[in-house]
Length: 331
Image (cartoon, rainbow, N blue to C red; front, side):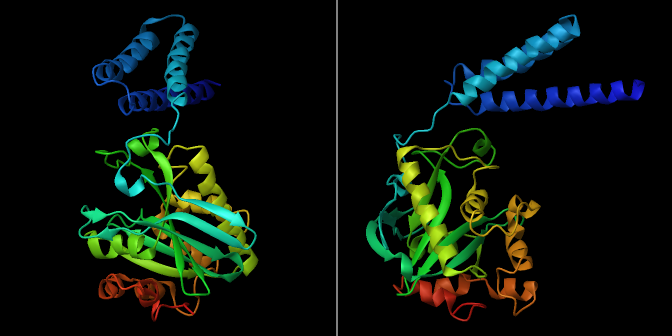
């Protein structure tokens, strides 16, 4: 009985420590005025600890602390995402799709003309795709050096050789930089960048320093499943245009969103730790048989690097075909 009481005390202390740390971070990364925020950042943990130490009986102290935490949590939950902010030029226009039977017209497909990573001209175009002509889904992994965490992008390929690339990203305001920590605390709206591969992929292979990009063909699903996944993407993109959502670095990121779109139609994996440590998601995909099986995984990964091909292709309109030449599993 005594040991059970010790375990309960330890668990309670852990819950208090985690909630206190989360509440303090939520205040620290909130959009509160700079004059007020520091006072609350220090005030919340100070008052909380004072209550827990000084108030008696302990149940009353715990109740008071719970009320303080609920106040912070309620304020955090009341923060609403918006589509009306001073957005950076590369994410200012939201894409959307018009579904007309087999014809799907995608508006505001991004195709930036880059001079450097930060110097560019934003361009958009509209294009109509035929759902019956959807032939493939490809997975890009962009590793910027962490190995265990990468950026994942899907690209839909059509019979005419065109590709529509979709990247789940943070929608940043002018002057705003991405922070992985801030990504947990409702600092960024979620956006789906729908773009030409000469934009999304070439940015990472040709202009950003130190990024290694891998390209894999996803297989194992009938064409009808691929079409349902594409439609699911389009519907979600349209929904974000009407009802913005928060980006979440843990639950609403580039890989978990992909999993959300594909799970109803290709549910081979219910859960895997590599969905979070997504630098290994290609290994997971290989193990469940959706990547090319003609090579050992290590060789497949090595041969799937496209940086040299992308650098050689440059701004060639045939960029998508050239980066796929000779890759395992590509038609």
